[in-house]
Image (cartoon, rainbow, N blue to C red; front, side, top):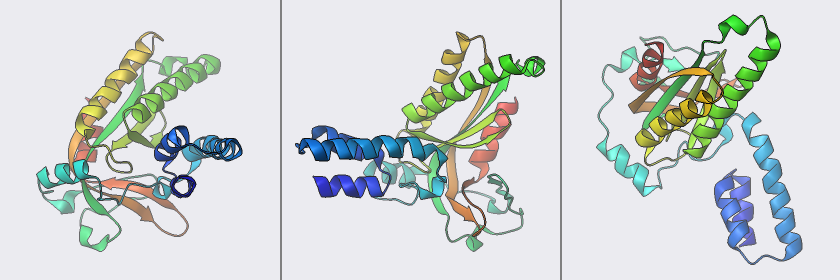
Length: 229
């Protein structure tokens, strides 16, 4: 059990590690040590590049394999766009030049804070509303097994079944955005979201100077377009 827990912790598979720590009959000192490591890794994880996390190239999950086998082909790949910070891909550049990317069936969400720009001059109020908004999005996405990716201004991008396995990604992505809306209604904070499911090419992309996790495909573009409507 101790070897398995150490393996999970080394891969940042914190959910499996937490389950094993809770259910395994470990000596108290070892249990306390693993629990302390787990708490620290949970606090570090939000600051790590997503390409360090497990799951984005895994194909051993049967539910995900089943979903991938149902997927439709990505059409007109030359029109695909890269949605990641500090990196863009020319529409004429074929995906064949991107060997690090893996085709997956996934869901993508884009949420946007609305009705608060009039409070920008009141920095205290804006910061409080922005903090509540980010907390609601992060909590909802993580609860539904998604991963928050890029935050650009008050736009928050998240993926489901791209970085982390999420067999019911289409339903989970919608439920996450509904949870965000419900959480912010009681705070009188407006939010609009776009959700799209389909095929995309996912994986770490960049250079030695900057590496980030990217999702490429019409699924990403559609989610951004739906958020604007």
